[in-house]
Amino acid sequence: MTSRLHPFTALTAAASAAVVTTAAAYWPLSVAAALAAVFLAVRRGVAGRVLPAAAVILTPLCLSLLVLHGLFFPEGQTVLAQWGPARVTAEGLGFALELGTRTTACVLVFLLFSFTVSVPDLVSALAGSRIPPQFGFVLASTLTLLPAVAVRLDQIRRAQETRGMVVGRGLLSRLGTLRLQMVPLVLALIDDAGSRAQALDARGFGSPGPRTSYREVADPPAQRRFRAVALVLAAAAVAGRIVASWPAGAPS
Amino acid sequence: MSQPALTVTAPGQAAARRRRLLEIAGAAAIAATYIFLVLTQPADIANGPASFSALVALGGFLLGAVLLIVAVLPVLPTSTVVLIPVALVLNVVLGQLMGSTGLPFYIDAIGTVLIAVLAGPAAGAATGALSSIVWSFFNPTVLPFAAGAALIGFLAGMAARGGLFRRFYFAPVAGFFTGILAGVVSAPIAAFVFGGTSGLGTGAIVGAFRAMGDTLLAAITKQALISDPMDKAIVFTIAALLAYALPRRTTFQFPFVRRYRVLAGKAPAAPDA
Image (cartoon, rainbow over all chains, first blue to last red; front, side):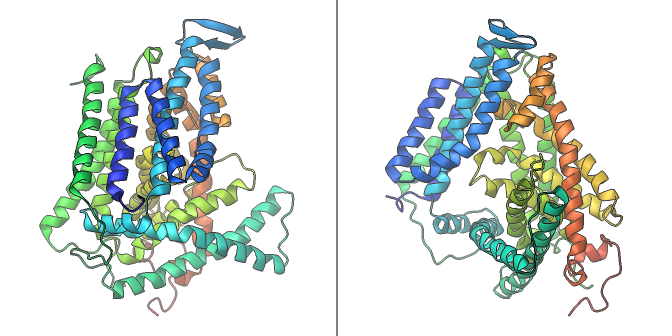
């Protein structure tokens, strides 16, 4: 099932879901979209990774929204409680609910995409499209570089510790140890990049023209139709929102 | 010294002009979106979440960022393209390292600024926008800020070209002004797309301005004017420190650094080893 879905189909589905949710601005729909994303994540067996990642992003955001709009919402009329300058208003809580659920839905939908997509498939799909080929390289290179850098940083830290680096309590000492780790890391990465550039150039990376890929990603007609329908739906949702709430004083 | 700086010459005049148009269209899309949002900001957000403004902000800024990437990426030399993933990784890793010092800033653009200093404004803008797009794989809330990140990279590159990194004390000043512009451009995203900032500290500042009766956009813009210039001044300083900490053999291999004499000091005796 994982390999059946073309990466662009999954991406289009995620983006359309996010756009429709944003355009609708109706919190039950946002909750439904979020629940659907969670359900799909459970079915695909990635819930254990999607949900913690989403929690790290969403918890501070939602708490901040709740405190901000729950306590300070000068536009609110229905005051539920008041302490000094802070007023809890029904409108403020409603606003926090709307935006919190909307962002939750969008984050879950996109994380579901990025944790289920096969990166090699995505890169070869990108290579076959009209997107500049360098984009696929940047994406794939970053995703493989991140874990490598974590290992590298650990090596640098241990090497510096054997040379007597001690993480002290003071800010200056901490900044000092930071410098001892940052400079070797940046130097090594930039140096590596230089040699990689030569290797890539020798293989024709910089030359113009189409790229061929050894990897074929199947793109059945049904999925093409689905993408077209999803895009039309998203465009319709945006158009509906624009017609419904074109600001009165806007230059048209 | 024989290499062309920044961009390889395009095969034809027409292609170069098309790219130029794309760059201008991208910048215009970002500027027009910002102006439109400020002019038409919903007077009364109590009527419902600013869904219309959110869509305009997302569409306009993302379109601008994508146009810039499409215009710039194909003409960057390979030595710069391979640096973009490095910049993104540095943004993430150095941001985490700085976070471990307990300083109350979200220092997440060191890599972008460093690449802008070494490879120029076009590379900086592409790096900023691409960073946001690739990072959104792990944190989708970063995606809407792509235009702001591109602006930071572009301005850092312009500051480097103007020689502001030649004197150590100018780097934080350049960062401060970059922070003002980037904060102002990013504020509508925070206001209309997310309805606030992620983080309780910045949220408290926004709350204080809201308590004084400001609109949400005004409160978030003021908060951004408090945090962002300081943040970017620190980022520019760290990037300058790193650029000077690197061996001269490494920094002077970049045509941009040599051509505009970005860093103080003389080029090493034998640059083309």
